[in-house]
Image (cartoon, rainbow, N blue to C red; front, side, top):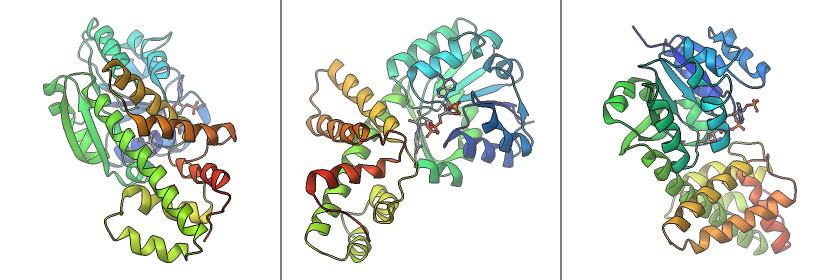
Length: 296
Ligand code: NAP
């Protein structure tokens, strides 16, 4: 029999992930801070809980998909949190992107109650979440990873065990450094093309197929041209991830010069009130600097 999954956090990513697990036949109980966001998942057969504690009491595997480190701490260790409803043998999988250090601390606290934890952040965006094609990078006890593999296979395509608790999150921070710089590269290429008066649709079409091709270019390039700034991946979350990466690098006495610069450029977008928009809205910050508009 399939284990019962408790799903906490039904945002842009969590909701489609929960729906995919329901479609795969997993029994499910869900909780979301804003209750109305549970409606669609409940309509598809999930039970609604009144707290993360209740989710833990009534499930075998709890998945959390919330925003930042303090949010994961709150839903797992806070009042009426998962830890209050946890029993020995429960598995907790945090799929949010948070600090590797905080992850290890949460895993330690849970282990005092006989609960095993995996950090399993993802990459592939809202598209990957909907299509069940996420890349999943996992830290934690290897035997727990093996047991949870059928669940990961519903959510993602490339699933990789990276090492002990925190290794999944550290991998995701490396991923985010590469993503952030890549978005900046897409913006600068498009800005140059616009200023030079090139046909932007044609440009995207040809460079996507060459060595400059990337997930960012294919997925966000067309949105930039269409001025579609709906998230996707919110700028505030991108900034959280760069902040986490810079802090991990600082602890290792490691310079990440271009990452620091992109952090500042994203701050221009934040200052413009674009925190809740998708990362493709970075193009508007670059347009201000360049005095040119990127539009199809
Ligand atoms: P989102 O749409 O903003 O959803 C965030 C979810 O977390 C919402 O359900 C929110 O509840 C809940 N939440 C936040 N703080 C909470 C708290 N203190 N207590 C309880 N619930 C809380 O974000 P998302 O895009 O789904 O991202 C979720 C995580 O996945 C983030 O760590 C993000 O960095 C990561 N991620 C995102 C993407 C992407 O492309 N979107 C890709 C890979 C990884 P409410 O509904 O009440 O606000």
